[in-house]
Length: 328
Image 1: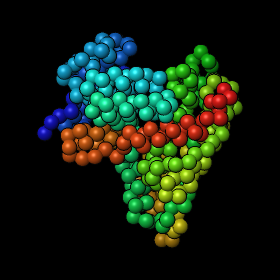
Image 2: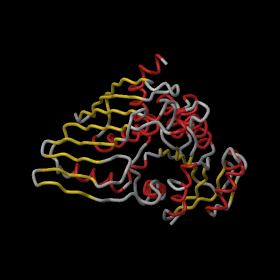
Image 3: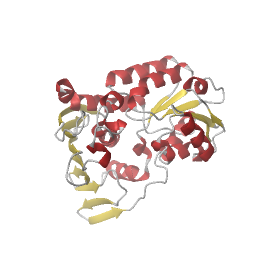
Image 4: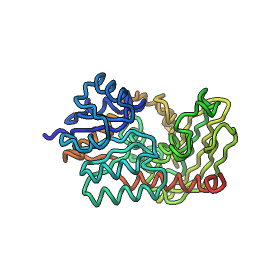
């Protein structure tokens, strides 16, 4: 069977454990080349992970005939130009989430990939993680009856580096990230709801910067509706006093409770009582999703994500943040 040979652009923190090893640990997959803006970082990553080629430039990696597909592990500001460049080089695209800074940029990426007849995947990798698939099985089996509503909450105190504008991480710089932690983390939640309950077709939100620590939103409340009728609400606050991470799915015959960003046991509550499912996260959380991409590219399976749903997550985020962006 064909092996998918990967190139990777960006050698930052996300690639060290979450994603990078997945490309050489997945079956019929190999990581053959890497590059980044920092040549020393590129060489270090290649040496530590056994990658044969450490290219000095993106152009060199894209010209490499041994590369079939490229993983773009950069901040969102670079997703559109790099995705277009990868597509024009005739290589399949796997780009970090969100696909781009705005929905309109997502459409450009999708169009260019279609024009160049290459496949496009976006790193909403929780769609392939076992604990999220267990929730989907419960829902598909009708264990809690008809789903009526879903509620999400993510509250965090500021991280130490958030407290000074001199140490702000790129995720809080609007020109680099396109938004704040809501766009970085909350969009994962919105995407998995799209996966579980069907396409999001309506969204409304209020966003604000209440902590005044940086220029992007730090507090967001939102409501939305799925095509099948499920209604949702969410609260995200990154200047709170303590940590809260909750998802509750309300059905006609029970409910499911879970923490989204941890792997603590899932809780299924029905008339039969309480059932818990303890499903630890895999060591490299993107590996199951990477495997599904490889399977699709080799014709042996299907990836549970697609460009249209990934773009829809950006559309929903745009709708929720529209008022804040219009006044900020």
